[in-house]
Length: 284
Ligand code: PLP
Image (cartoon, rainbow, N blue to C red):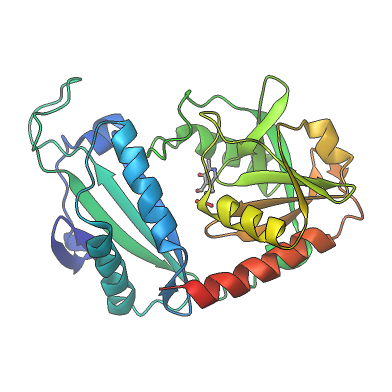
């Protein structure tokens, strides 16, 4: 695999980052994951805009213009011959110096890393066909989940807990309500209404979420942005998740309880269809 590191395209085994890099020592960095379908990037402008916002929230500038980032993404997709898969981008505060809590002086070069992951058939896996199961776990993450930092220990532990319980993923719960999935936004459908948590510092503003809610409203579906409980999910007609790499994926079991018919529901199926069709059309 060819990866990008601070200006160079190199084989992955030749890529180098300082051991003092704050991304490594302090999770002081931001990332984005953009999916690739048919060799093209899905919703790149959305991911670039969120990257800039996340960076600004932790006092970092964009390492380059969004247009230059797009060129890097496309270049890496071409170099690695990616048809379906993703591009991972990480920007950290860098730091070639010694370890220190204080930020390095302004103008210190950031670290910019991109790599690809090939995932043939990304858009037509078993999860979409059969739906997935989730368990609930306490949301133990920090208070600024709207910032897409590389601090992913809590979601990793949530995914391990899911795996240990024989489930596919975890939904995180805080103050009695679902915040979001370990790496996706969470939804239920009840009496034709699509319910998903409102934006705020408690969740990440998914790029897929924004697109899916737009398509849902355009298709005259009712959307309610509010918190919901695990019990509501268990009694819902449908449930689903969204993220860049899962698109819209039905959830058919929550904490062992079957949701609706136990099969992917019509709302999730329709939204997935619309999302994939529109995303392919607009991909860059
Ligand atoms: N919520 C969390 C915690 C995530 O990590 C992600 C994506 O990785 C999402 C939501 C979904 O965001 P997006 O649709 O932009 O991939």
